[in-house]
Image (spheres, each protein chain N blue to C red):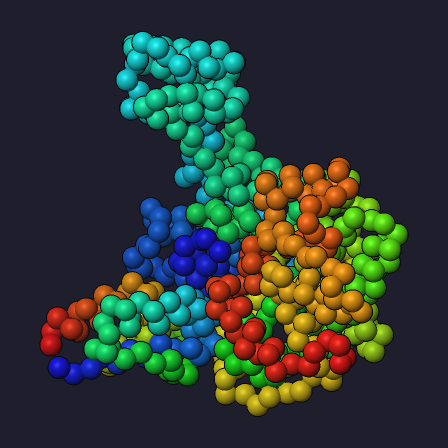
Length: 86
Length: 483
Ligand code: SF4
Ligand code: SF4
Ligand code: FES
């Protein structure tokens, strides 16, 4: 089974627009998925400048899938979706 | 911060759009378009009944962002006109908050209410316990006459089935001094003679109806003028953004300021002055002294707790000393305090050395609007580096600790903290004031917000991680005894 990589954007735009709340993922993810999911913090993913007019920051990437207006719940949902496909 | 994430996102997005509008080549037009850009034709409406209603509400929120009171809007003035007025105004108001009253319609009035759990029992303890005769029995069920009910809640406790409930109004419940009230018409409004600017109601209202009146346009205007604009950043900012405070300095300069001072520099002066004053007061026989750096607490003393005045330190706040230094070094400059809370707006308004106040959310919005990525930036040094203790002023316990470390005899102090002003802690302070003693303690640190400034209403980070970040940063800072 392939590991799922979650990249939380900690760039300034994402952090200011609500990314601060995503820090709780650190705990939930390791608790819930152990080493099946790897969580990393990332500098600006480059999505905020393309997509600002829709103002969907904060962004998280679960493998190649972008979660916009990310909340911990939305990220967990996306992980579950991808795990189910495996 | 209790508001749902969506409301915070919405409020910040509006700020970003206001700043972008200001920076565009047609501020008035772009300001007018904000509600349409955010809710374009054909868009699915996320929160309310229709796109028109949503736009109307976004317009109201934008009015607050431009610095005006929403309550006074009569719907005939366009956002373009407001933008124009914002450009023309030369004075800011001392009323720092404004309520989006249309939101209050969706929020039930504060009342005591008999639920379906009422069994119509024979004993009727609710009826006999009510001193105001507000309860009668109709069709075998207990009914409360709202015009007689004094909301004493005796009946709630009397009912063995727990059938009587209090419907509460979040803003009223959150206010420690009874300054915000929903009136008979259902609209909440703030009594500024009572309001201590604690900002609780801004966080408590589920609709995000209470807004700070932003001074962002006044600050952007100052940046465009040929005057120097200097940012003074509160100590708690160290836990609020990505990167460190040296990169943050570069970011703030890139966003349009000319220079940045740490208010922790002034905190060092506060700590040392307060330590001296503490020793003198104890020698004079006073039983305890309270700190005086929290703006919310200072408002409380002024408006509700004058009896504690003799026990409050006369030492000035970190912002006071910092602003004094900045104005001395740069007499022509415009000073902006970068703040975690709305209470400091009140302090800034009263201090002639502080021209404007901008909160962390607004600074964040400025970074977003200008596409500044703090982590990518070089570090800039501060001319004066503050101490570890000065930099720890922003969390509960930090101020008392800094005073302790500044004393000749550290053992002479027995500190305790009031971590957050609420009805109970205010009662406690009142007790200290009237009795003249505070059991087991001689230095009372008072912070209006829970957790200290890191729990301020306009913070970006949650207070737990913010505290960790501050501790990581300050462990390598110089001890106050060496400064
Ligand atoms: S909590 Fe207060 S301000 Fe918010 S909607 Fe209800 S009455 Fe209005
Ligand atoms: S800011 Fe604080 S004191 Fe003022 S109305 Fe709101 S909750 Fe009450
Ligand atoms: S800051 Fe997150 S995508 Fe740019």
